[in-house]
Length: 303
Length: 332
Image (cartoon, rainbow over all chains, first blue to last red; front, side, top):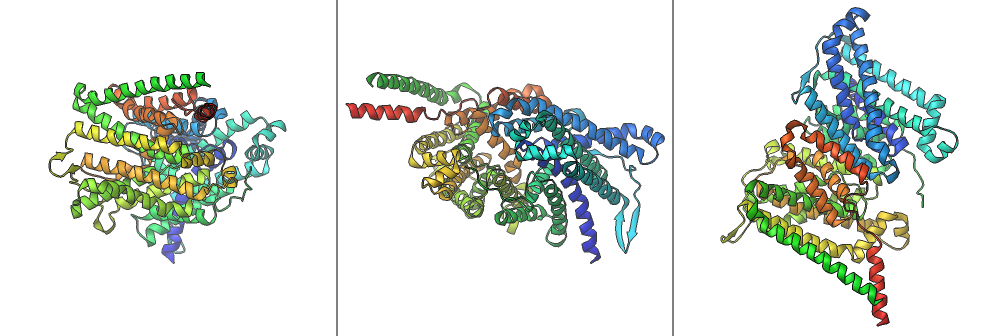
């Protein structure tokens, strides 16, 4: 029982990384009907940006803002930086080819992904980098006999706060209603006076910003980052997005958390080597019986 | 009507000349360039074959398949295991690996063929990843884990004709690519090809005109996978070894790009796309670590300026001309 609960918590921690990345995929897909293949690499870029900030800027931040200041400052700056990178990519690689259909954008997105990945390699070098160890004190809490690290608590707190914030923005504010309207029908939304350009700008800033923060947290949790990790996490997060139902915000959160838990349970009870096989098998089974994902709605076919 | 006919003939003669020149150039090329470039052109051929196989699924039917390398892996590993363990000659394994990949495609695609667009896309990604991860984990000790399988024989007919050097492999792959192109051009103009294109343009309309959408989609997957299996067989015999990392997700994405950069459903386009993907990094070796950076940027620029691909397929033109020809024949 104790092991199950501990593994569930580990799964939720990993799942919250996936969920934060998946939100970016899902928002972009909802409005643009485009799979942003560069998103995983933006996440890796966020991780590297956080690394540089924590290595070179954290002593200053810690002195000025206290013990958590360094971490929070690094995450915020990484989020802003990756948000800017996301909008830049949208301007350069996607905007010129919106009008010609969806498939050219796939190639363009893959191109952007290769550029970012190799850009990271050129700037930071091909070797994996190690995050500084003392960002979060390595305290182990003992809750009802379970071993929980302080790091996990902080990661879960931050991710659930971010997810809650995003959920509030999308579901409760006027701006969120505009985003949802665009996702439903872009042309009609434009006729109702919604500025599509602004919506797209915010989508491409907000999604990658969340991914960037997730990147910093992954760096702090595993302490080892490499320039190719964007593909791996991007693929998992994309799987999570589809699992929950693409274009659906709560679906992306649920899919991410579920994927993390499945991965942890799979590696505990089946085999570590086959945990990814298990995850993909579950995905395929879910799609066979629910072709639009767990929370996706059934859409009537347009003729 | 006669005028139309003569224009068409002139056009086809001109096209034939281009093709003949290209073929002659390809035949004499190995005598001009060194072994390194012959090998580069061999891998260009492998990519061309893979591009053609994906083109059936993606270009002709419009199904997003981002796990195509999984099928190639099945073909390559079928060849490797059957040859090293049971000593079956490679030339017999060529059709067997195609059958194995095709049968695998039929098995895994049957339950998922009803999925649409991006959902099919992620399932094929998952399928490709499952194949790679399983091979990597060495099930029953037959795939050799991350190291792969070593010591695959060269393809041979008896003991006299053995394909054992770069030049022979070069002719071998391009002979097979040529045969494939011949078959695919005919397939494009057949009832099957037209049904595929109809499904791509409008699935609901295709179904309502009596096309068995499900079977035609499955046929495309099985044929595409079979061709990828052939490519896997040749790839394995050339390298004399196979390892799971050759079939990763990145490679599947590159295949996707070959079809889209060349032009969906266009056979000359696929050849150009394969050339772009396989030769471009070779030409830019001088840039060392900036090579892939330039490559990615080139992909973006390419799509901005030619979103339909370098050599898009002209649809409708063939149909119209053949109609005129028919009318001309009827008029005498």
